[in-house]
Image 1 (cartoon, one colour):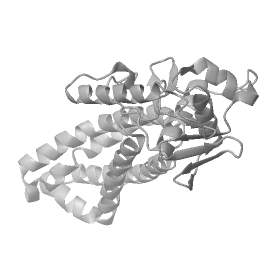
Image 2 (cartoon, helix red, strand yellow; image 1 turned 180 degrees about the vertical axis):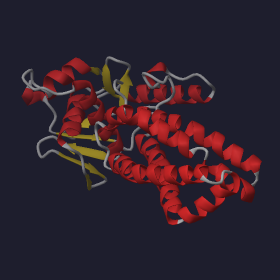
Image 3 (cartoon, rainbow, N blue to C red; image 1 turned 30 degrees about the horizontal axis):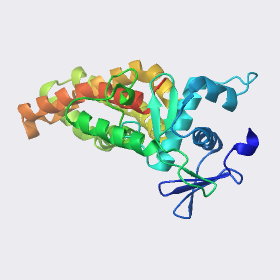
Image 4 (cartoon, rainbow, N blue to C red; image 1 turned 120 degrees about the vertical axis):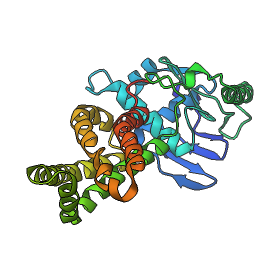
Length: 288
């Protein structure tokens, strides 16, 4: 019943006011959007118990609402975890029950009363034990990525690494455009005539295409565009071709850095687009 629902709840360093819709950490307000806040409120109604994804769908999105429910819920939970400094791989507050729902595992004080979840402390200890076991090579299946079957890292980390890769390519493009005449001289050294001109044209065209592409991917990851994963998958064939072409760029510097380092750099760059795809899939899961 609504009258029995808590109006004020405390857990860890956090306090949530369900009437005013505010989340605070040690008295400082934490910015949290409406949907993640509603997810937290639902979990706090039954601390220590699993709330199914279907229950959340019914509460968060009425039947006449057209929305990608799975993606919307995953995004809301991810934003809630970011606000709480939590992680799916090592949960302190929100635990994923694989493909079924979520559970709030921390002890909760409601309306100034005692701990509302007497089993929560035991659950936290069990979760800590699972983390220790994972360090020994035994990973709880609930903390694994549903598609990649690897421990789920913090989304901030995966998005940051993805952005760094885009910045690296952006620097490649800008440097090549600023020094295109030097590129032509190097190309003339081992492939004179039309071959050298073709290399220069390829560098200019791909750099011109790559700059807006990288800017788009950087802004999408920086602002956490909810459909970046889906859009990246659509763009991946073009990104793969572009990145594989630029993977041979170190050979333009082979005379200066040596054949071995150029070969090693090319080998690393050949793998990089697949690393980008893995990072995006880890940060933007389709289903948890």
